[in-house]
Image 1 (cartoon, rainbow, N blue to C red):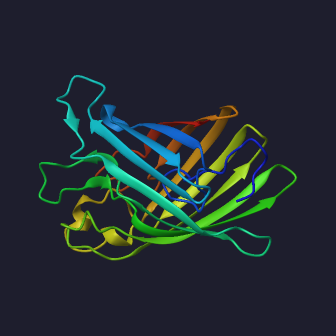
Image 2: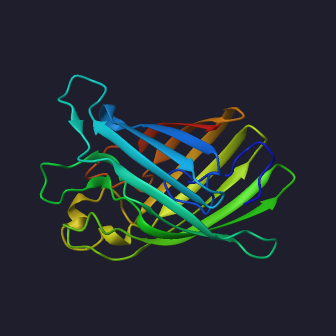
Image 3: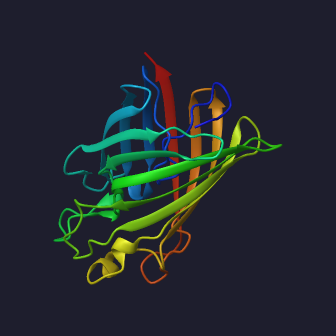
Length: 240
């Protein structure tokens, strides 16, 4: 994926995966501050220029005075770029990410996160240079094989875009169709009305530090939540 020199391509947008991977000898640390004092952290490393591997872990109610609820296990994040991006073709990657978003419902028989993980996915990304900066478009499909107790095992679709306003600021928008949350008991837990529409502002504070304000679930179900979800995501990239 082509981006301005010194600014690594994002390996994900707000939540959806992209075709971008960490280069060999680099690693990223991501911290996502979520609602109700939740915190999710992830560490990933570029094993080769095409292959990255990472783990994530977190907890509900980490900040606050409610009882602490750790996620049930560390989650895996593995990605391999199959095809490099060219002038006429997008880059394509295949990966597995078992980390969901929001609180984990351990006491519920469904055993899942507020928003399901992407699981096994295929992602494509294409970049163009504009007079402002880089414009990137991303899309793909996924299948969650770990959070299926709700009876909905359908494959899912996602897409998004990122527009650089200058070398420091970028606007992001994505849509997770949530096709694996519209059947049987899955629908009773889903917090959206017709998929998850998310938006964000990303600030590259210094060359390798990204601070992102996320506005998630803009299509929220007002019968289940009062308002859309605000989160803070911090990503730091360094080299061995």
